[in-house]
Length: 308
Image (cartoon, rainbow, N blue to C red):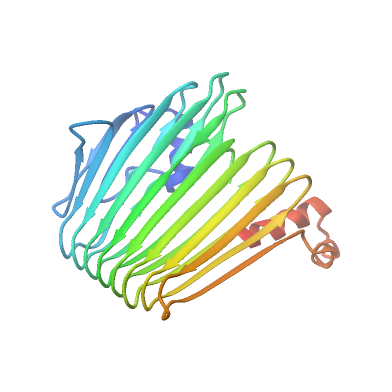
């Protein structure tokens, strides 16, 4: 960590809550290169022999361990595509923390496209946290286009926390999941855009076997002249249950397109979707302003609570 600049350390703090070297397995990537790595008896991290990225192997029965694989970019004009594959054994219980921070103070666009593929073993439980953050006062854009593929075996559970709150000019997130018998997927997305930013989130979840379930919820705020598209789709191909929800606040000249969709290919599939877009209620602002807050402070309080 000592070889990283103050800017890079701040980015790590924002995307992975890291103030120091994490415990357990980790791979820290900075400006296109791995700068620090640690493996454990149960978690091995290997550099790919072809292409850019890493393979993470987690042994059967690994519990109460973590893997951190954050990425930071602080060089203007750097563009990279990285492939990270997770091979998770049976009966595991592991925390995986990813995320990317870009600080761009130059005139060229900086871009990181991370492709993460998860192969989750039987009865394993994975909590996955992915945060995106941008900073820097340059005219070059901060671009992030993550792809997440999840292949879940029988009885497995995955909880995904996907967060992008500040500073990313353009993002196109694609998440694909295939669930087997009694597998369970839970997604909580939090997104805020401002200025001229654009954000597209696409989720396609396939419930392929009996007892599989998914709960995909996106909360977002579009401010200034920003644009968002939320495309959440669940396909029920068996006796399964699925729920999607888009809940958004629109402000200023922001624009939001919510496209929740369901596809039932089995008479036993139980699928539900919800979508709501609206402005901050006036009575909420008035209530907070009577407590001494300015209108701007009241708005921030409401937004922070909404995205918490």
